[in-house]
Image (cartoon, rainbow, N blue to C red):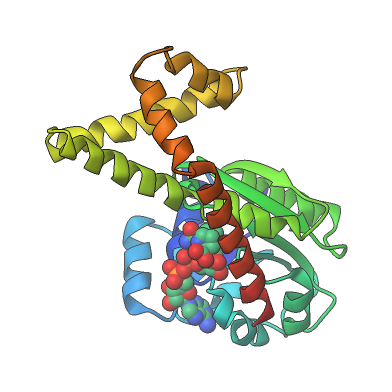
Length: 271
Ligand SMILES: NC(=O)C1=CN([C@@H]2O[C@H](COP(=O)(O)OP(=O)(O)OC[C@H]3O[C@@H](n4cnc5c(N)ncnc54)[C@H](O)[C@@H]3O)[C@@H](O)[C@H]2O)C=CC1
Ligand SMILES: O=C(O)[C@@H]1CCC=N1
């Protein structure tokens, strides 16, 4: 990474930890990462996991001379958290990862005329395998855009959007998406156990199946539908399983689940 500015994380929970892990894994200097969190346990855990980062309970200390402030608190506490950041200089880039909170609302809470990137990363960022959607408001200049691009690209795939509303769809797809895949892993493991495998073996096979399928889909020029067809021998076993999924309405269920997530993102933005 060329950008060597200090990054301050406000909130050091799951998502901040994932981004910090990804950044350090990409070579970003730990000493240039500061995190503030009111939880003693959270600070102790971060300091242990990421030696060299600066942890503090004081948001004002964390943001001192930071070029980028990553807002990684829950949407429900964003208004009160942002309020105490109003005195920050106008040169600072704010990078919010909060679900649902629009840049316009955040700008208002931060005192107005702020450079804001609203991003929706996901937890595989921890190992540099994240998938992030991002939107920059009109106040973000070229240097700040490059800074956000560096930070988010360091932790995985990054897609920029011109239309901020797309971020609620990104939240429903890739933001929450790892949880859907983990649920599938749980179900595959349980299914394997039901069929007589021991739990450890079933989990190992389930995880490698999801990993292998994802890598194959990413590295192949063929669509997931084509790759699926290659597994599905006519008159074979997969065909029977897929019939159960289709008649059970799996596609519709996934669409409904994503719709519920997107709705919740919009609600969180309205609170
Ligand atoms: N967990 C995930 O997979 C993803 C989360 N997000 C977003 O990231 C944000 C954080 O989510 P998580 O990390 O999952 O939550 P979390 O609960 O793990 O972390 C939030 C942290 O903020 C701290 N905090 C609370 N008030 C604070 C304050 N005033 N100043 C500083 N720190 C404060 C809490 O002690 C906690 O450690 C949310 O807005 C969420 O929408 C976005 C993408 C994915
Ligand atoms: O569940 C949530 O609200 C957050 C946003 C996307 C993933 N986790």
